[in-house]
Amino acid sequence: MRRGVMGKGESSSFGMAVRVGSDLIAGVAVGVGIGYGLDHWTGHKPLFLIIFTLLGFGAGMRNVWQIVNAPAQEAGTQKDGRSQRGQRIDD
Image 1 (spheres, rainbow, N blue to C red):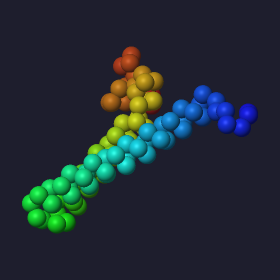
Image 2: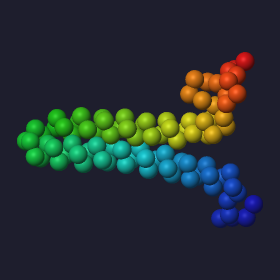
Image 3: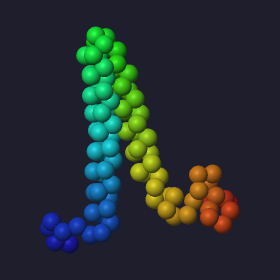
Image 4: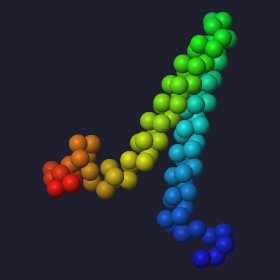
């Protein structure tokens, strides 16, 4: 393979890694921004910053979980572990 040219699998893996990282960082950044703004507005210095940072981290992890599990759902599985035809995947 030539230098600087990625195959289809490599580019999609890189794109997924960038999306996972950006979703996680965006969730935390939004949480920090909201927490800082509420702390500044109410005068409770670290309280809302801590709460919304944790909520932002949780939201980012939820997005990451959905991204990582998306290929399995596209392959024909449902949330209960059954295929589109109603058979269990592990049977």
